[in-house]
Image (cartoon, rainbow, N blue to C red; front, side, top):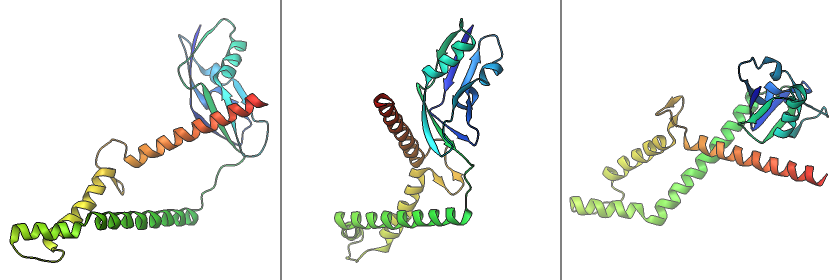
Length: 204
């Protein structure tokens, strides 16, 4: 019998102390239903408090091998699985969430606007506009609106197009730069936690 498992990188378990195989991995058994394998207990939460545990794919293979000693088990997913245990489901406060979104948006707006203004000051963009206006129209004009207004509009549109997301409207189905950065951050965080827990396990 061939058993294929595809563990996830991180799984969140709420309230229940027994972690089933289906909670952390996809299971496929050639020619048979995977229902019985999915219900196998692969890990038991030892403590009640919120904590993150590390489970190796070897531990999963051991559980499956005890159930089906003659089975051939193939892993097509992660080698280490993070299990985040929550004693109770997290409750979201809409007011607190809104306050955090407002604060982060304010910080990003002030930071981004300051960066843009500093960049324009360092590169002397107003002077460039004045020189361009003189070249085309033959007169000196301080911060010509004919150039500065279209530039400002284009700058805003360029940011919207670059980030590929404005409100609920998405220009394409591709992930936005922010989503890519968040995914990269999450993967690096998980890798760091796995490395830390592996070192603790090795030193225990």
